Amino acid sequence: MRLVTYFIIVFVSSAALVWAFSRAANKGLRKSQIEFYGKINAASDTAKNTELLVIGSSRVMVNIDTRILDSVTGLRSYNYGLNAAKIKTCLNLFNYALHFQRQANVLLLNIDFNMFEIGDDPYTDAYYYPFEKYYPGFLLNDSSNSSTIHKFGFLDVALYDDYVKYAAIDGWLRPNRKVAGGFNGYYPHANLNDRVNLNHQFTGGDQYQINEYGFSLLSDMANRAKAKGMKQVFVMAPYYNDYTTRNYSKTYQGLIARIAQFAAEKDILFLDFSALKLADDETNFYNYNHLNQKGAGLYTHIIADAIKNYLHPAK
Image 1 (cartoon, rainbow, N blue to C red):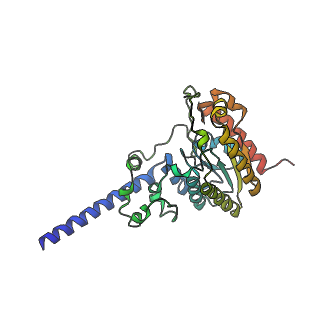
Image 2 (image 1 turned 90 degrees about the horizontal axis):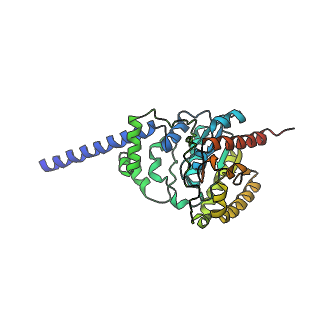
Image 3 (image 1 turned 30 degrees about the vertical axis):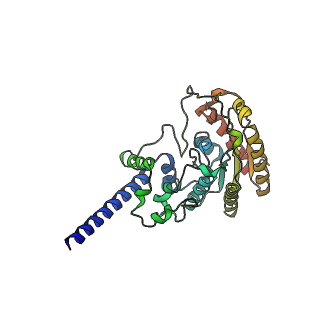
């Protein structure tokens, strides 16, 4: 009997510790104001008045300055850009944001050359767990059985890798930490003198193909936005032109044609800015595929003017 009692005590104590750690980790993630968790927290906390959803990868996060976007268009925008986000994560972000920003009436989506290669999306299932109770169904799980474990709740901490655990600790220790120069999700590459590997040779660019399942997710996003009565804008961001010509020309040609056709069929404004004049000037770039703060300012003005003219055409 003593042995049974001992095992019961050990089991209950262990379960209580796991529950406490899971609860503490999830609360820490909810306190974060930076990177993935900051973007998701903003949707349900600080960005509820958002009218313009800006969604995409780092080509959104560091290239589109929401201060300029707001001042030109007169709309309240939030930048949901995330490093290396693919179409599945973009759809998740869109659905989650729209659940809270119900007055949002414009979607600006950046189209990346590799966004339809969904297999290497870094935002795996475990990233979403703390937010399930705020928006049931946010977890789009088609790759693992982790959601089964998540149903027990108190085992969440067992699903988190070291990065997530460090993010939770950071949320507790530095709940007010923000990115210097950032505004409404825009994270600038502010150092104009820090230009990296503009002539770096990358031979894998033309190997990216459009995954048809990924493209169906884009169609799901466009259809939902249309059903909500939202105006939609797709944009292709500039890369440093000399680099793009030598490395991505085939990928871009096929993707741009496909997106242009898709946008025309869906009545979506498609802004192909992959070959803007500013992309000839390396002083506008932080590295070959990200603008610095100077370049982002120029680029955002161009996008904002196009959106303003689209929403309010001259008579």
